[in-house]
Image 1 (cartoon, rainbow, N blue to C red):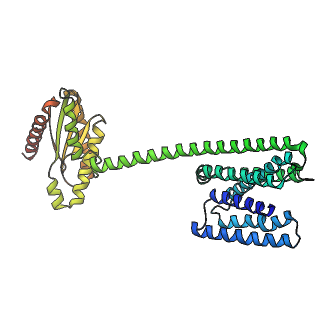
Image 2: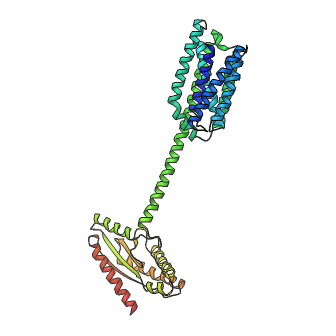
Image 3: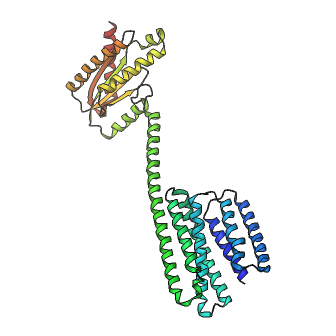
Length: 377
């Protein structure tokens, strides 16, 4: 019965460990190797007992030491995470064995009571491990710091436990020390609880950080999509789609006062034909930068065609607009100094309520074309 119990302890602790560790190999291979290891270990263990080896020696040679290397072979993580997990899993299995022995004390260490009590505790251990598995794997995969210190603490507790219960003789064989064992187990349980809460706290911080980063990436991606849909790539001002969307939004406040400015670059076709489209694109780009430099962010600047631009300002005055035009004229001189061909642009404006935006745009266009004819004359 003791031989079977030793094997059940091995099978339980190794199963729990493998449940709480990502594998280096596929599941089918791990299960096959696990079963093979268990059968071979049990056979060799039985042979050693027949040959007269002590049970503790045979258990260490066939179960404890080989299981360490087998789990290390199977585990994906071969660092402090492995050390901590293996030590804690083995400690809890050892605790189940100690408690099983303690429970049998009133029954004078009856082997049947030891067996039933230990198997029951192992079953509870396994059931709890199954329930806790996903939480621990989340910690294992998420928390990257602190494993070294936790592994060191687990090793020290492991050594302390071995000394406490086994030196100079097994502590659970002395009735007067049963309260000491129970207190130790309670302290160990609190230690595990504190570790778990700390790990969960780190996970929550990590999750919050990842959510913030994901939100930032989503906002940046939305901005990219917005720019692709509503921003003119050449000039950086809003495009025709944004212009139509803006006109649609004006329906929500038809009494709003607005000023419309229509602008058009003179002789762009001549520049494209005589010098090249690269020169025409450069001129359009410079003109877009000029408008961005003159008008504030509150005013909406749109490129609605090849060389056609529209600026719509809300609640602007004539004085404000003429001041903007003076700034445009000054900056236009900068463009003329940068290009090797004549640069002129035409402009026209209209003023009214948002309810008549289409009419205002036509009036601004008419004024702009009148200004263009004046340049030709």
